Length: 202
Image (cartoon, rainbow, N blue to C red):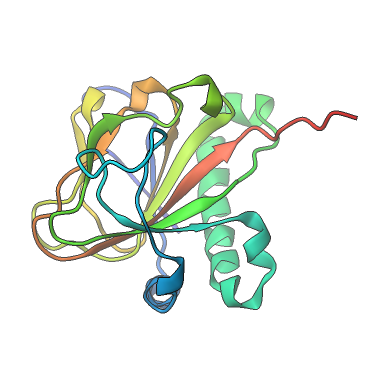
């Protein structure tokens, strides 16, 4: 895991790393392609709307990770945790004040040519999602052509998909973003959130 820099004219709080594990990412893509029974059309909080988001998704819940067939994701989260630990080390406030975060259900997404998540959005846009603190994403393959980037509009930052490139960013409106239309090639990502744990009422 190697830290990379996201260039912009001002601090952007977008963490970026390169995870070097070709087999891991190939295995996750193979998991996606070999489990078509789990595929669903990508959706947003308001439902399915291909003018906003057009992807093919698999949603995986924490309970699934206990099954042997989902073991590849345990290895992935070991790598993601190292990225988050490095992110915290860069911002001492997080290390001192945010002690525990959970990962709820997460998604693997496939973008075919013409697919996108082109509406500018953030990950905490209503009270339903107030528990989200950060979003995270890893590109599972390279996109050689100049399209299909992730665009953080407030910072004019565009991130080119590259296998193993991993991002962590705040869930707030300050990090509104979109996934550009993929004109050629196919893109795979794994993405989800780091959230405050739900309090248990005794």
